[in-house]
Length: 135
Picture 1 (cartoon, one colour):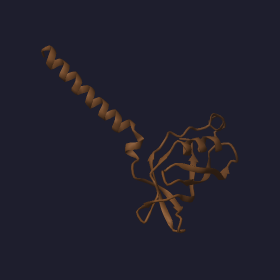
Picture 2 (tube, helix red, strand yellow):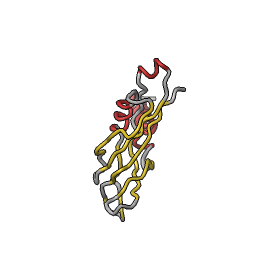
Picture 3 (cartoon, one colour):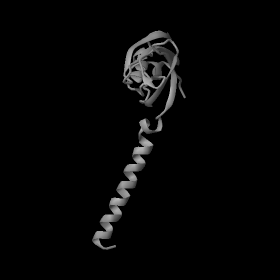
Picture 4 (cartoon, helix red, strand yellow):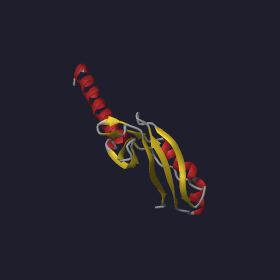
C-alpha cells in the first residue's frame, strides 16, 4: 500500500467498525417498532404502545446479595409525543426491593407516539411488569 491507499483502507475499516458498533450497540435501532403493551386512547379503545429504546436493567445489589427474585408491575401513560407520563408502582413482590430499579429502567425507555386512527394521542392506563430473575 502507498500512503493514500493505506489511509483509504483505514477509513473504510473505521466506517465498517462504526456501522457495526452502531447496529450491534444501539438498542434503539434493534428495538424499533417493538410492541410493549396496550394503553387506552381518548376514545377508550386500546392503543398499542411501541418502544424505540430499551435501557439495561440493573439488578439491585441488595437483592443480588440476598439471592432474591421478584417483579414490579408498573402503571404509566405515554404522551402524544411519546414521553413517559405518570409512572407508578401498581404491585411488587417483594415490596419496595425492586421498585427503584424498575422505575429507572422504565424511565430510560423511549416510546413512539401512540396512534389512534392514524393520529398521535395520549395513551393512558398502560401496565408493564418488570421481572427480576437471577441466572
